[in-house]
Image (cartoon, rainbow, N blue to C red; front, side):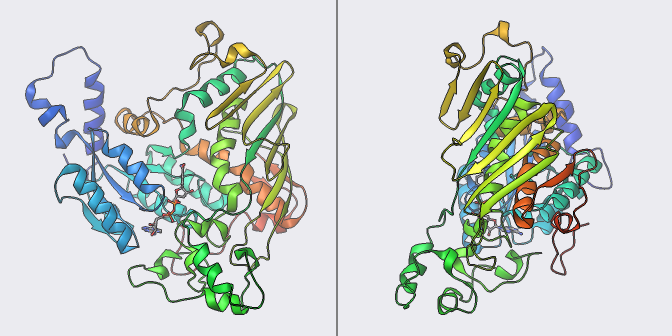
Length: 467
Ligand SMILES: NC(=O)c1ccc[n+]([C@@H]2O[C@H](COP(=O)([O-])OP(=O)(O)OC[C@H]3O[C@@H](n4cnc5c(N)ncnc54)[C@H](O)[C@@H]3O)[C@@H](O)[C@H]2O)c1
């Protein structure tokens, strides 16, 4: 029962019917399950993983832990990362069956794959996701949905057209404190919501730990540069930063559809976030987490702001690390709700806070607080207060696999991811043009502002093309 693009009686349909059968009260014959209680290979979800950097390994470990999933292929442009993927996956299964790929298109052309996990940098999300959707592979894809709003729209269209299952890496929805906070708001316990505060990180964070070695080199220069956002093209510091890419890393493909810039180690793995050519800074890195939760409580998974005004502090546009270091965005939502998204402003606490006419609730990773001490007790609200019950998942990665089988929407489907990231994209556009912008929520257009409208999309470097 291998999937075949010519024959749509696919592995997935087989899995769906097997999943449905599991809820029936019957005793399965011994031959219906594999050794050690694992589902038979033909009834496991065959998964390919793309991107083995910071997030890919964690996502993959969560899938390896699920017995009805088999990771059969791994893809990365860095040979060292790819080897590490193979070692981890083969070590887990105690075999050598995982197939390595350099080109995700080759991996996705396999006819035995059911689904893919994508953890590539933001400038790759649209190309890799739309290819997977075209191949009718279900997708566990990372936040933010894409680098631009136009790319996000392309992903939404591809997922809908090909009727695939999508789960976003916005895993906070699968955690009880975030679920409880959103249910408090949706059940009206804080009254009418008037204001929502979304606190995100500021500055740049050297995730890869590659900055010190360059800063040490730069210390020999008269300028005494201590911050990579002060390094600009043409300077002696820039010339010291540029090098040949290492032999094991295919930088030319890695830069993809983005502008071809010289290789700088501090701009690639993990730290691509701090260069607008490839990432979106702290704002876009985090918007898919805390704004995603904010929208859940506001019931705005298919909605968004109509007015957006942002102010921020930016290094030079061509600096080595050039993304916004401090920002504050005010957004007007339906029902006269004001949202503030901020990074680096002491009055806006990290996480999500909803303020209503009768109380407030705040939630973050490792933190929960509310105006009513009763709401702080227990993992979830008392049953009698739960008139509105939000989607509950058994675990974010588990939820994806369950939905691959049931063909029901996941807890963070593609449309939700699209709307959760949109306020970040629009806030950045407002900051870049230096004025308030007006957004038509239904048609997804910026009103009366040609310069801002241009920033909804980006130029693609040939031969890459978004279909
Ligand atoms: N959900 C979360 O909590 C969370 C946390 C961290 C990162 N992320 C997201 O995960 C994604 C990846 O981030 P990261 O920090 O892991 O990045 P990373 O740079 O650490 O890893 C990305 C990997 O993808 C590889 N890669 C890049 N382009 C590729 C391509 N075209 N084909 C195959 N491999 C390719 C790179 O070589 C690298 O190994 C981002 O979208 C990020 O926002 C999510």
